[in-house]
Length: 220
Image (cartoon, one colour):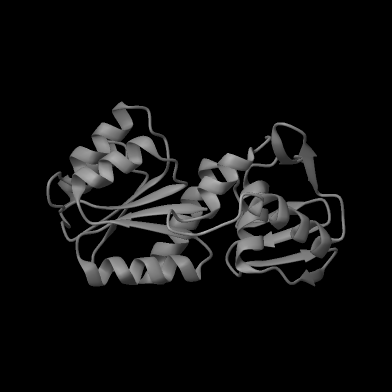
C-alpha cells in the first residue's frame, strides 16, 4: 500500500514516514502544497495523510481540487487547527477522517488502516480468504493456522491483492502501489515476488491472468 504524507514540519513528516513504513506501507513525502496537489492528481496512492497549513497551497484547497477532479483515495487530515468549524469544513470538502495535533502515532496508523479497509470494501482488520488469514494490525499471515514467514515486501503484495480480492491487478498497478519512487527494482520484480509468496503459502491462492496481471478469487 502506497501512502502520500503531506506535511511541511520536517520532524513530524519524518516521524509519520517512519511509523507508516514500520506498519508495512510504502511512503512518499511532500512538504509543498503545489507539489502535493500535482502528485495526488497524477499518481495513484492508497491513502493520503494531509496537513492543512502548507506553503504554496493550503491543504483544504488541495483536498477540494482532488475531489473535484474525481480523485477518490482516502484522505486523513492532520492539523493543529482544532476548531470544530474547520473540522466540519474539511469533512464536507471530502476528507474521510480528521485527527487534530498533537496525536499518537498508534492512533493515526489505526485510523489510516481502517480508511484503507473501508475503501476496499473490507470491514475487519483481519482479512480471510479460504485457509489464508492476514492480520493487518499485527502484519502477520497464516495458512490453516500455521504462520507464514513473509518479508515486508511479500506481505505488502499479499495484502494489496487480498484487499482487492475478486479483481485482476496489473503488474503496473502492483509496482505503483508497492514501491516508492526512489526504490530500485528489476523489470521482473513483481513476477519474482509473486513466485516467492506462492512458495511460502504453499497453496494456489494467487492466480495469473496472462496479459492482464494477478488476482485472488473473492471467497469466504
